[in-house]
Image (cartoon, rainbow, N blue to C red; front, side, top):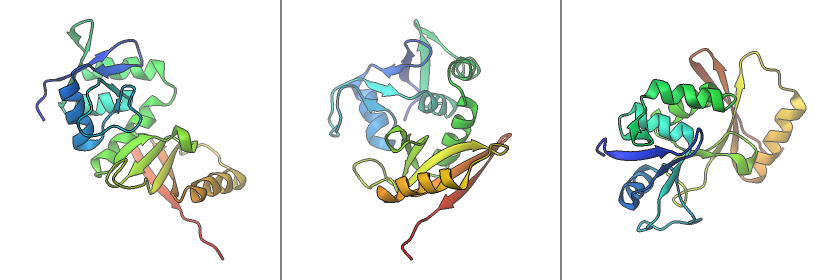
Length: 181
């Protein structure tokens, strides 16, 4: 993919790729973004693409997109500062997202599962997400009841529950699998 795909920062949290051709390339190749107004897109969709802030920063860092605001390119440091001041926990979310994407996973928002990310091996529509990921700081406390609650939700939707523990610039993953006794 060339570095010519342009994502426009509309405000401090919404990014859009206006070109349907560029949108299709990002979405069809590696499942970045969400086609605007199309809940179950086909490969030939003809719509702009909404990018999540972590996706846009990841693609900018990989030199696969340009992010612009009012026609001017935004450098990655400036974009990172905007997102870190706009979203609580963005730095950790970005770190975990980058780690998972660099390992070859497809990562989507996990809001419908009550967690930070849903993680696929192939991508939405190709397989079901085998993992749901919740991000926590190393010093954060979690009760056994919270783990059981998250695990039950994950097992109900047939997914492994993973806690991504962030310490400085390092991420450790703790996976919980549930089985019947």
